[in-house]
Length: 258
Ligand code: BTN
Picture (cartoon, rainbow, N blue to C red):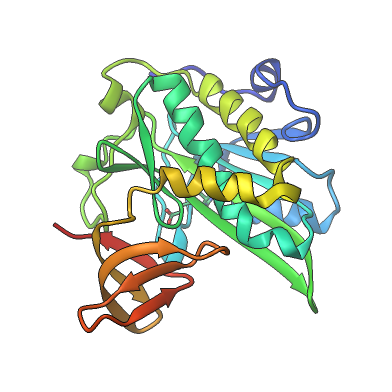
């Protein structure tokens, strides 16, 4: 049984200026993405965090379902970033998540392109970013982060990628308050560095476990197979196919092969 979450206990763990300074905890929500989006429409302060004890309709990337029963972490952060920073939000969120998991478990975490966090080859955290655009301007961005803590995904059927929970991999109880505290502190640290995107980019690139590996990528209806050679300046994955073509994958899903 993990400890109860509360806005108060999380705020005690924060060293931030604005991320999580307004934090609203709900014992149960359909999805923190929906509640955060509503909050953004009402122009809540930047950095507002919506966090749920449990989600009944959590969603993942590519229209997948995200299972987050009680005992895990499901939160969304409301941001109002300049449009030029949008490609770097994925990097910011995945670095913050990977570093917070490492800080609490003491185990190395890697990033599977573009933003799945893996520990010992299994997914412990997923990130979903939804942007609202008005013309060429970003009105808001919602950064959704789900971390498996007590979940033992091995018992679940139909998973796209092998998954694990932090308690399972570290064989001990994990404080969700501690993980969320590290996550939000790290997020603000990296978010403040957006004007110097190159630091975020190289830190993210260095944590990618995908590069140099044979991969299979699904981008829209296309399947691209080859060697994950590099990432371009905006974070797109460059795959060297068998016929030597270098193919760019901007969004989609990647499976590590072999
Ligand atoms: C993925 O790996 O496909 C992304 C999963 C994102 C899950 C988080 S949990 C908090 C937020 N609310 C949701 O419904 N989804 C995101």
